[in-house]
Length: 332
Image (cartoon, rainbow, N blue to C red; front, side, top):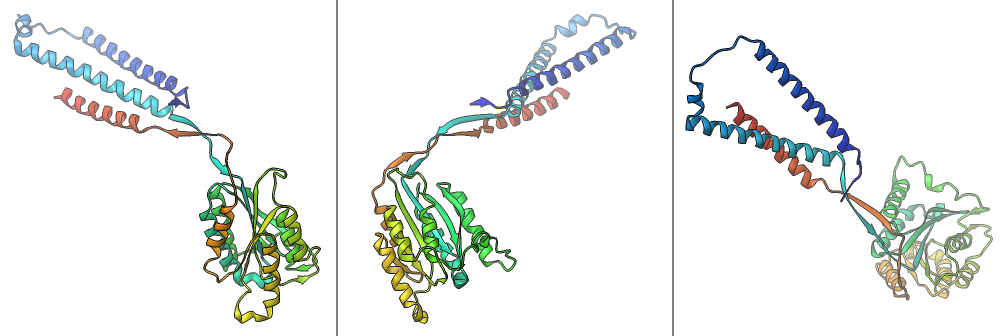
């Protein structure tokens, strides 16, 4: 344990010194007044002070005075420690895994009714991982990084919650759209996937890199890359792509060709393809990603300081309670 505010004891000592000075000054003033007052003479007072009862009372009074001073000392010392903020310091080095995962979400108009559900799938995925770095990229005509690769899972969860609120709230300002409408058309799937591949850092290191691509593969513009070209680019960069398609339902059989193309592309990268309604999507993606060879890495060391006030709070309350009890006994 250590004192964060090391100067606080000096402040307490000055305060105690001031109180003692005032007490001494008052006591001296009282003695002067008593000295100036007319004395009252009592004959044979030594007989009174020699009585056993008087001696016991005097001894008890002295013990009470000593105990009161001790209680006051405990209270002052505990207050000094609390004011100085006693903490324990430890060094924590988190364990990380050499897996990176980019969540890649199509936010075009045809995906509006599905995006909140897809973010819910992403949240379930995140809850199943531990130590992997995760990023989220939103794309339409262009791609923007919603949050970069990070292993701060509290931050990831907060950002995903914020995105769901932005997607579903009647008072939404559609903040998530910012930066996603800068291309030629909309829903440029190949460009979106290619942009997600480019979000991986630490190029050259041996790491597992995966993309979870959520889209209906419905293109409405002129992309720079086709989906097949983007898939080939992902394979060249040793990135595995997993696809989740909300448009793969019987009521949208006109999208069957697009679903088949998406299935072909993601499986060609070594990944797998799922319909949004598939209950095995989350478990299947997690199982395949975690099955890849990995090793545990050491993250940056973090200094953790924890307040340790409990003992001193108990001492302060104990000293205060004892002081009040002793003051009551002294008055008697």
